[in-house]
Figure (tube, rainbow, N blue to C red):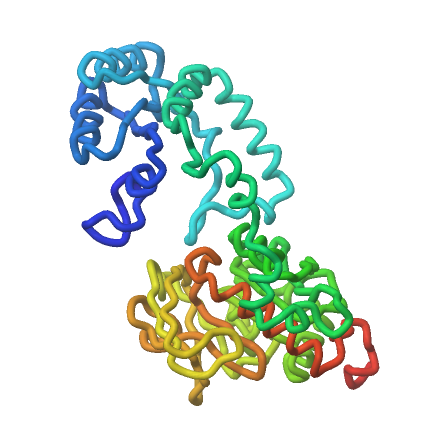
Length: 404
C-alpha cells in the first residue's frame, strides 16, 4: 500500500496517519522505472498533499544505472529540496518470491536467512546511512516524555500486577490453584507462522507461558490452552494429514474442554478436511465443515464484527476490528454456531464468523492485541478458569486415545 492508502479517503489507518501521530519524518520509496525529471512532480505532489506529513528524503528504486541515478537525484534536490538517501539498482536477484497471499513466509524456506543476508550485502553500499540517521534524529522530540523526571520510571512500567489481576478476575483465576502460570501452546512452524509479535507478547503479559508446537512433527504437549494462527496449510496438506496423532489429540482435547483460539489457517486446520488439487486431506475434524480452495480471494480487507452470541472469550455486544485475506471457504451442510455478525468484510459467508464449540473460538478474522485489548486477557482468563475444572491436557497420555 502507498503512503496515503488506508481504510477510507479520510486517511484512517494509513502510513501517513501514523507518521503524523508520531511526528516522524517520511522516507519516500519511488519506483523510478522509465522516469527522470517526472520524479520531481511526483515527490512534490506527495509533499503538498497534506502539510502534516514531512517528506524528508527519497529512496530511488529500480535505478537503471549511474547516469539514470544522477538525473533523478538532480531533479529531486533541485525542485523538491530534499535529499536522495538511497539508490537501489534494478536487479532481479534482489526480489523475494511471492504467491497469491504475498511474500512466501521465511519459516517455510531453509534459504530465507541466506536470501536476506545476500540482499543486505548487495544493498549495503546503496544507502547513505549517515544522512538517514540525521533525518531520523530530527524526528525525535526534545522531550519525548511529558511527565516530570520523578514520575517517568513508575509510569513507564507495565500495569501493576494487582490491576492486571483485577481485570482478569483475581490472581487465583489467572494463576490457577497451584500458583503456576497457565501454559498456552502456540502452533508455530512452516505451516502456521502468521502471528503478530504483539499478540504473543500480550498473552505472556496477561500471565501465561507459551509453549511452541510443530504441527508436522510434534505431539500435543502438556498445555492448558492452544493458539493456532495464520499460515498456508494448503501447501502442506500431506504433511498435516500424516501427523495423525497430533490431530487426534487436539480433537479429543477440545472435546474435553481445552480452550482453543484459532485464526484463518487455524480455522481451516480445525475443520474435517481440506480439498487439495489431487484429493481431500483429513484435518482435526472438530468443525463440521470441509474447506474448499479458490483461485480468487474469498475475503480480503478490513473486518468489523459484532459479538452477538455467547462464546468463551468475548462479552456479547463487543465490536471487534481486524482483517482477513483468504482464498478458502467453508463448505457447510448444516448450521454452525457462530458468535460474530459481520458488519464489514466477508468472514465465513458474508454474514457470520467466529465458530464456537465447547471452549473453542475459530474465525477467518485476524485481530491485533492492541486493537482488541479484551482478547489476550479474555483468553488467558478462560484458560486459567479451565485449569481449575479439568486436568491439564497431557499430550502423551496414550490411554486417552482409543486404538493405541
